[in-house]
Structure formats: structure tokens, C-alpha cells
Length: 569
Image: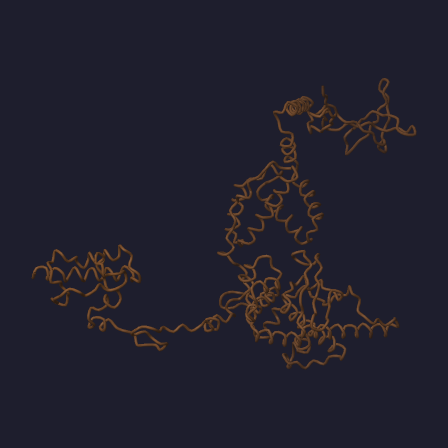
């Protein structure tokens, strides 16, 4: 039989407390913010006085379904309420032992009632153990907290599909993009799935929340830079740091690039421009993402002529695979010269400081100092190069558009789609061919012109490749009704022994011509009609017959001309 009680603990006697004796019990009295407090005294370790305090709420002590003694907080200040909780837990234990209650489902239901922040703390540790990036982890947790706060989810048990759908509908009215709405949805579903997988939630139906159509609501569409635009961009990027600093900003000479600078300042700005242009070139010719390039070190480069490549660390790559990326020979030469100049600058600083002169750059040294504001820098470079930020279709150019340019250039050069997918490091070829290929820069006309020539030959009136003048409606009106004879095969009589499918019947009977129709000398009743002949020939399966339209035209013509002949006979 279980029991409820308040936990007792001891602590030091408050400063200024008065010790009094009531009967046989010693009591300490003191004031807290004007209120009198009392507590019994006991002897602690070493014989020092300590006050005895009780918890504000009751605890329950009982044996669970396995026979283990469990002490659980009831969070009840009332003793009768705490006893009711105890009876409930003891009854659950009996049901589990009898098999009428699932213990796992019961534990999940209890876990689902725990405050959401406690689960999020455990979810954070799980994401850290999974070695996801800090950015991904912070974004997912922010998304879950945002939706939960707006929907009023205090515990995982509060997860409700309808509430999330209402939240999504409100975000549509606020103008949130489909892609952003899907990110919030996927983040919440991922957390709910984790709760189910760890036994913190029995189940959920959040995955039934409709997914937004990102294709019908594109907010950021990137375009590829043309080769001419790339050349202009690299030229401007290499000189703009110096020209901007030399430009006079006020006075009569405002706008002129005539400011007097120190030689060391000029050299520093020229090196900055060279680095910026090389950053753009590396992004375009390797397909690296900005964050991947920012973490690239000297030790990850192999600039051997003819087989140069860079090796990405799995922790720094988006796919967490650690791929090797080929480097063009001209880019490898530029990087080799860049590193040589960086080493020379380091050696100069070391000599001036009287330190040992290094012969090599350390492997952990960053290849480039990629600025955090590269997006804004690129925008200024685009303006200086006369390249529009947004084209006529609303597509923009940003740093990630360099990767789109890389994918488009691969397609323009005739690279096989599977090879382009490997170069882009995509798991889905649809992403390579659809998102990262700018079809406006592909030579579709040239591809069509490369198709083989197919001349029409081998028939009366057939063309031999030359284009003829089109026929008008007057030409067809003045021409005899010869379409059926030219198109449809000659019908035959299926019952004649001399007739074979696909050939003319033997002309072994005397015939008379009346109004252009062949009529046999035999009685009309003994000769099958033209319509019957055509039908019979179609029934036995003529070889080489034209479509039904030709037969219908012959049939109608035969029926129209047969009636006058019959009347004359």
C-alpha cells in the first residue's frame, strides 16, 4: 500500500533567526520580507543546528508493475488530491500486470505531458550527436518554437493538425513564401517524429498538413551570368577597391579618381581586388557554395598540373560527404600564383619582425578571406560592371547564382547530364537540369539544326527537299475529284478466285462505262455494289490500306453515283 508525504530537508539556520523552545521542541523563528517564519531545529553533521523544511507539494511512494518502489511528485498541495493521484498510479500498475494496459503507450502519454522546452533540450542534444551544422540546428529549433508559441503548444500532446493549418493560412495572408512555410512545416514534423521515435509521443498527424506548392510561388529565381557578363564582372572586381578609394567624394573634383594614396595602400587594395576577382572565378569554375569556399584551407588543395583538385572536408560540405572537386588548369595557375604572393607577403612580415622566415604556408591557413558581406559587395560590382541585378523575368543574380552559372556552363559545353550532376554534387539530377541550368542561355536552335535532314522522296509529286508553293482552296475546287483514287487502293471482290488482297481484280469480263463508272455486262443484282466490295475487302484485311477517311470518301462517292446508273439499267 502506497503513501503520500512531504519531503523533508535541512539547511543552515537563517542569519538573525531566534531559537525558542516550545515544550520539548526547539524552534527557529525569523522574518522574510516582514513575514514571520518558523521551523523545527535538528542537529546536523558536527553538532551544528539546522532547520528542517518540508516541500510545498506532496510526493507519492508506491510499487509499480515490476515491483520496484517508486517515489513520484504529485505536484499537489492538497493531501486528498495527492492520494487520488496515488490511487490512479497504483491502478495503472495493476492494469499493466494484468495485460489490459500497454506500458509503452502509458509512458509515452506521460512523456507527452512534459513541458515542451524539456523535450527541445533533449532534441538539441540529439542534433548535436547527429553532428548537424550549427546553422541547421538553430534554424530548426527556432522554427519549432515559433510555430509552437503561435499555436499554443505547451507540450507535445498539444500538437494539433488543424492549429498548424490555421497558422499556415495566416502566414499566407502575411505574404510568407511557400518555401518558408514548408520549412516550418518540415521542422515541426521532424521534431514530432523524433518524439515518437524516442517514446515521448504515441503518434501525430502533422504530416497530413498540406505542403505548399513552391513551383507556383517562386520568390527567388536565380539566373546564370553570360560569358560576357562574367568577363566584365571579373574586370570590375579586380580594380574597384582601388578606384573606389581613389575617387574623390566631395568638392570641385567630386567623382574623379585622383586621390593620392600611399604605395602600400595601393598594393593592399590591388591585392584585395585580385582576391575578390579570384573568389568569383573560383565559385564559377568549381560550383562551390559560399560557406564551402570560406572554410577552404591551403592544405585541401592539390595544384599538380593536369590533375589539380581540392578536397572538401565532410564537416564543411552541405551534403556531409567530403567530395573531391576538379580544378581547371588555368584556375590552378591563378591559385598557385595567389598562394606564392601570400607566402611572399608572410615572409616579408616575418623578416621585418625578426622572426624565422617560413618556406611554406601552413596547411590550416584559409585560402581566401571571404567577407561576410560578399552579397552586398557583389551588388556593387554588378552596378559598376553594368550588369542588371534583376532581368526581365524577375530572376536575380547573387552569390549563389555563381553556382547556377557553373551548372549552365556545363550544359552549354555539351557535358553529359550525369557528369554535370556529379560535378554539381547533387543527389537528384532534376535539381541539376531544372534548377541549376538556365535554359535561356542554352543553344536550343543550334541543337535543332544539328538534327538529320529528312527529305521526302520516292513518289509522284513528292518533294526532293525543295519547298513548293502552298496550294489554295481554289486549286482544290478546280481539280477533279481524284483524291480517293490517288490515296485509296483499288477495291477487289473478295469472292473472286483471281483477286488477292492488295491487288486489282482480274479484268476478264466485258465492261461498259456509264458516267465514268465501270458496269459489268451481267445483271446488276449479280454484281456486288462498290460499297459491299470495299466493306468485304476491309473485312478480309487488305494490306496497305489508307486510314478510314479515304474509305469513307470512296464510299460516299460510290453511293452517290451508283443510284443514277441503277435507274438507267
